[in-house]
Amino acid sequence: MSYEDVIKGLKVIGVVSLGTFAGSSLHTAMAVQPSLVEESNVPASSRIMRGMLMKSSMMPISALLSSFSSFALYFKLRATPNEDQFWLMSGSAMLSLMPLTIYYIGPINAQFRFAKEEDFEQDEEKWNGLLSDWLFYHRPRAVLSMALFGVAVYKLVK
Image (cartoon, rainbow, N blue to C red; front, side, top):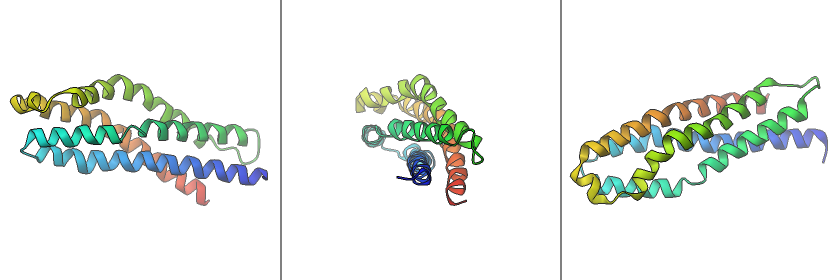
């Protein structure tokens, strides 16, 4: 494999994993969560949310893959005429999302995952409060990853 092939491969891995994370984050924040808020059947909404959280367990892996491939690309290009600080910033930004996810979003996800349907049926305000908090922490993550994805696609085709 040539040096250029390795660089192109790292860019593709970084862009695809970043796009996977950004797309699923934005879809969840802009389509799924608002529809769950509008749903009047709270037990059904809680089942949907629980199922969605179980299926989204790959999201941290795509964020880490994006981060590590961006770091590898930056260090491969460092001290060459093609050095690009964007890949270092992208890797750092995606890696910085992990503490946000673990500290703020993780406990909210745990409440959604392990609560019984009846818990939310009797306390609809708790359900709406959890959804609101979840979106508050999830939206910046989605916007940041989408912005990075847009720039990364530009860098890939440039």
